[in-house]
Image (cartoon, rainbow, N blue to C red; front, side, top):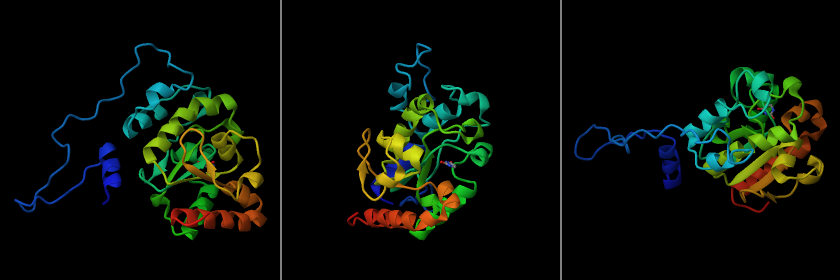
Length: 245
Ligand code: URA
């Protein structure tokens, strides 16, 4: 296990079991005798320092961030969601996949990309040799917009610090933005996916390289675009292997 992965797991409070040299078999748990990580500290003022609360969020660890997201009531979607959908996968993944927002299945099950589009996304990743568990999957919005309407600008803004913190914690080598809403929000543009795909972008807030492809739900409706999505995935594969885009 490399140092980055170890640090990442330890930061998440995941214990590693190792054999001690002087007693066998025995357990040494790094940090086991230290106090548990503190729960999120309530801000002194009820109002966050900015509309997205970024100042508080950007210091959170995974547990704190998850708790904050699951309890979030920053926008009206809290009234209509079943539950917030945080994210799933390897917290140290090389590839971070970012979609739009939970749909009905995700809202019910609490995990991103578990419906029909999610099954296609899983197959797309598998086609470049990546199991779903090897990547991290998150969305622009953590809560389902009613009727699966597009996220509103205000909702994306209020959710943005959560996603930025997820990006900072994962430290991916590459981000794959799936679909128009994801790409446009991440790259602060209104260009269509067709113009954004095929090159490597840089994320304004985090500096991570970003590749754009079609949303799997769109591919289910427009299978003739699957060949282009396959080109995008091959680009992802090359970039992750350290090759040229
Ligand atoms: N579509 C998305 O963009 N995200 C999900 O989690 C599910 C469907």
